[in-house]
Length: 304
Image (cartoon, helix red, strand yellow):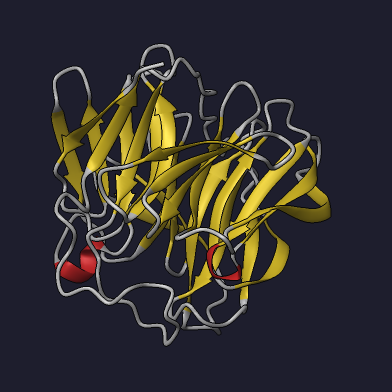
């Protein structure tokens, strides 16, 4: 089946991440995780019908955002969970996360179908397995549900809500867990896929209506679709290498939106990232794929 890839917004995102499709408004939100470090906005919104974009600046790094039922957002910021009001720009801290550990920050996150927000940490120096995976419940209680993580990425759920998927970029491993939708509990952690034979590393993920897991392979420049048993079903090469995350959107949830990063400098001593003088042309843009004939699932809203 033929498909097309187009650049929708030349956003020049320092670290574009976490796209979220708002089915109610037919709009796409995403974040620039470290944009504030280079004077760029942190939160972005696109109306694909008109092409109009909006953006908002923050004085924090932002790992992930999810929409709330009132139309505003819950954010995983560098130092904790926050509510955000798009109209006033007001930030309200829900709870700090690991204030005693200054080199960690919250990274990728998503909401389950009971309205719980999961977000994991990352070592900002990309070296040590010192971070946790956290669950923010609608009653605003916070629970650490896993630990020993270097860089959290790709939390998502199977269509039947019985399996939770989660990756650590620098451990080069994606795991599957048994998921208890009633309690938000994780059990039976097991390997699902790894990137040790790939040119890139796990970044953001989503699951389609057939139960296949999609991952954006950062540095490798490919979207990979895994079957529910962890086999590679297909690879889609993207126009830039530093893709970071993806989600399904559009009226029929049959379009894929892909974020990317223009960031070229990294603090780690490892050699996972090639040293670059300037970004690849088009890096930091938002892309859209059409024509695959595959549909996604609607993103839930945070219940609190």
